[in-house]
Image 1 (tube, rainbow, N blue to C red):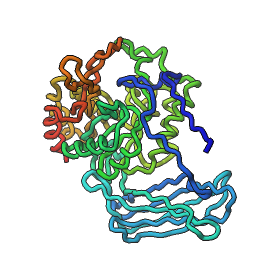
Image 2: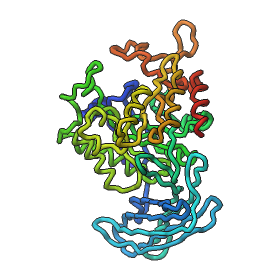
Image 3: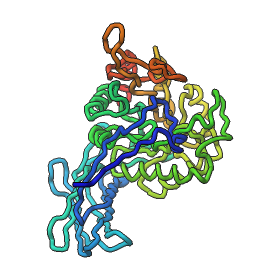
Length: 445
């Protein structure tokens, strides 16, 4: 009683230079705002690190914990691991030790056999961390579902659990034709069902982190995730089709370095426990420089076993070995892909965007899919994109609900129907192009 919770929304800020994504420009709060009451003894951070050993049979789990307990010292943490049927597989405890402002501890557990997580069988184990206070009472329980999988590059080929990884993916903006970028759980569930129905096994969160429930759904459904940092600044180096980076942001400008590192930290710390994330992406179409290189260094220092993706190193080859683990392009023609793969390729190849599905499109998908059989270093890609961005409004003449696009709202300048690139319409009805996706992607199930 008597407390005031105030929220201030900025229409524009300096951060707008880093958020030049192609979408409708809305301003407001699009995500849930939650106020929680937490106990005095509280898990401030937990990091589950499941490891699948090279034999693809055994594994281990390391659990790192940071606990806030201002007035307590003798706090015990227990790690409990159960299978799908709640059979107990491991249980260990540790006395937490004071490290700076937190109580910290690590628990390791080895498992002789583990079920593997992948798109065909996304097997998840039930993990629990229990905190007990000084008097032995249970202070807090943290439940989490974790999976065992291993992604790695061997001889320039990406492997998941010892098998060559094939990506049949899409880029996905968060969108609802009535609520814009504020989407609900029912939208997410519909998207997951649509992907599984049409043999889509991967999603790139273009070009920002998605709502938190989405990652849990991908964990459970076996959808591989390229988790992208909130960064795009294509207008700072692309000038009417030409590459002119003299005004590029963030580039190597020291005043922007902490801003992009903060975005990388936010992406990692929020989603590090999600099994479905195979790739971290440093952002989209922002050229290359020291600041983005620093993001890659940050992810590399975490040593979490995932690969790092960044496409715009293609425009500045001085950074190709220090920014991305992959050779990644957008809208390269099949012959361009072959040219790279036939001329001493340095890295595995992924198309982070291809088959721009605008209008009567998707007819060339088969030419790209043939490359998967021809070149082991080619791993597929992510179609641009999953859903049209259009707004459902009532027509003033007919009174019927219709979809409206850029430029239909006296918004000038506008990119008009350029937001309509989806393989589903804005109301989530599948387009005819989806038949092509379902067929060709289904060949690589």
